[in-house]
Image (cartoon, rainbow, N blue to C red):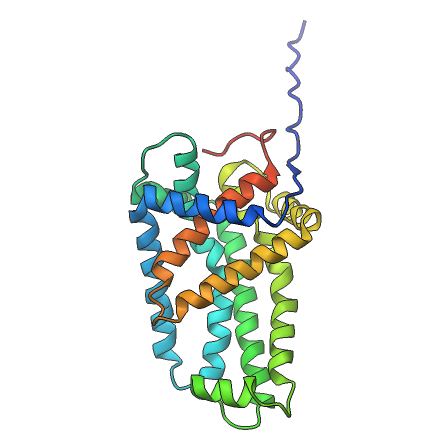
Length: 264
């Protein structure tokens, strides 16, 4: 009699939870706790982000119309940069006392095609916004915008123009679907075996189930990042890992992925 293969049940698809906006405080607190428990990988990631921001500033220091888009575009790809820190939070959650830098970088040595492909898509989105932002400011500003003071005076404070409002609105329209597609997709890639399309759909379901909570979370991420940029970008050294660890806890609270096989 021929041997019949054993049928394995299909993995249970992830479900999403509805959470109150007050949950943001818990994510920030737990993210800060992770950073304090294992600071080295996070601070090195943050220092790399600050160094990259400094390089952007130096390259575009005479063309602030380009710099404004570049920094806001960086926010779109920052979740990919933080992927290694999700490893740290996950291992701490599993009982590790601390996690070394090599462990946090191991995710990139695995050459996971999902992370690489998704990172490229986010990079394209960020590049598209940089070009759109530059075109909008150079095409419609009343005078050349070459310095931060020019951007404030000519774009932000010009009461005869709606350029700043249009710049913000267009940035929000472009950033919203990117945020909705990635807010839980990247930590889900790290945590479980799941395809890109399925992970993005889970991320959108989480946003649709928590529109107010995740809108507040997006504003929180932007606000803390902008404040961190103020002191010569040095605040990014702490803000980047803090928000990365907090984002892991946001994913864990929002998504029940226990029905999927663990990745590592």
